[in-house]
Image (cartoon, rainbow, N blue to C red; front, side):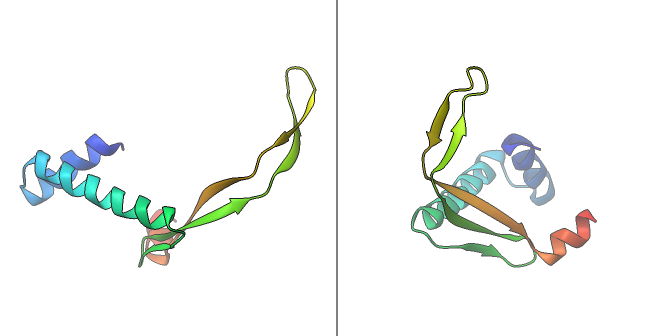
Length: 90
């Protein structure tokens, strides 16, 4: 399912126009993104939690040439599913 599919599904279930649903989805995703940028966790009880983590720099190598290089440090997002989602999937 992609964003368009989600929009169509919610629109059909709620009988609201797709444009309004797309605006709601964009606002929701922007709020999640903004919180993660600030370093805050985003928790939707029963669904899951997103956390921003810092991955350290580490040694690596180019698989084509075998040349050693350093993979720089960066931020990553970790998602942990909530119990309700876990039960639904399993």
